[in-house]
Image (cartoon, rainbow, N blue to C red; front, side, top):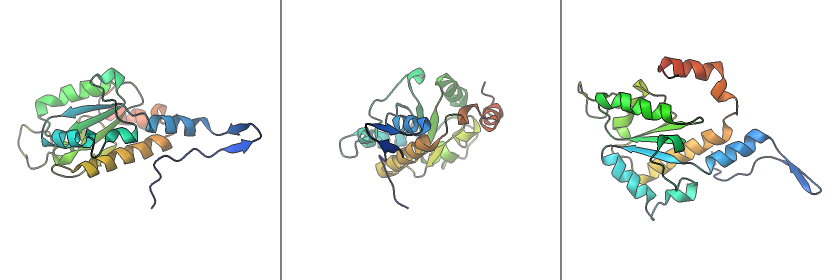
Length: 179
């Protein structure tokens, strides 16, 4: 399967005009202007810093501007070990984000609790918030984080404009107790 990073939306081109679907243009704009909010607690945060540096340069994928305010971010990147006491804080950060919003769980700890099968560690952030993409590894290399960003971009490009108001999505939010 071939990866097409910046594919233009399908359109009909005539003399002096071009027609396409609005959801394709909106999806392309969203995918190439991501404002991530890093929620890093452990070694995965260090790998994310390497991903932002010049060698890997996350800015090439439209995610150069990090946001440290949930109200200005549209991608929550949870990296590292999340203690159960941090679960409500993580949920609050997620609910403060404006729609549309996406979540990446980076590393084994954020995805499943990792090697820390203890009473104090949350066994995956999907216990408190919905997750769109899981990035495996302990810690995952920068290439894996970039792959997770590319998967989020594909999700953003292909998501219909009405999905966030669909009954299925509202049931998912209700499952997590999010209004």
